[in-house]
Image 1 (tube, one colour):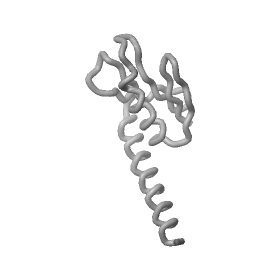
Image 2: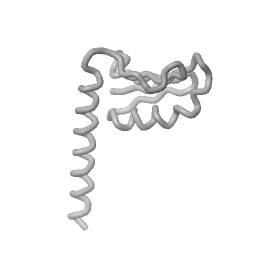
Image 3: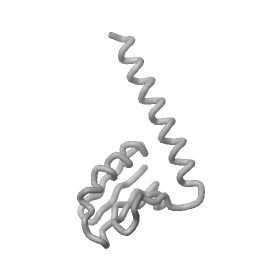
Amino acid sequence: MFKVITREFSQEFERWTDALNTAKSLQPKCKGLFQDIRIFDGKELVWVYSRSHTYPQFVGPGTYNRLARLFLQEATEEGEEIEGEDSDS
């Protein structure tokens, strides 16, 4: 379970892709120097965006690789679902 948290927003997601897309959509609203957007995987902080960094930061050893593999897996599953729906028509 992934959780996106900001000062004024908090929402849980089953999929990493959904959490990441939501966090990215919140970036323009992160205007203060001390505001940030965080994604937690359970209780573990895995991703953070703030104005003090040019790009979002992946937190912890191996986190980027693990989440990149999860991103690809979810994209593949989503593609298979869409393909299945198209063949049903």
